[in-house]
Length: 120
Image 1: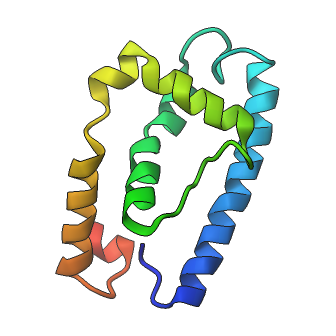
Image 2 (image 1 turned 90 degrees about the vertical axis):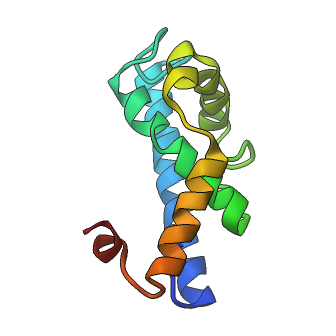
């Protein structure tokens, strides 16, 4: 979102997708074949990673970037579906359009600013 050029954006997307590959591997090890990072039920790591899903969806809507997809991270993609269906996620995750609107305001408010500058 904060890339100044298309080349920089492509690099950042590549870095993010590489990190998702590592997260896919970590999920496989942590979950030991179960539904969530913590096993059979939502745990701390599920909440930490799950809290980012809204922003991943916002990036998809804004830029067409799919951060977690079945072809690259099948375990995580299935986890995203399961996590999203939990009562916990349904209760606390805001509407993605609200996040997109917020990010667009940030983007237009301070074009060229870094994330740290925007959040200060």
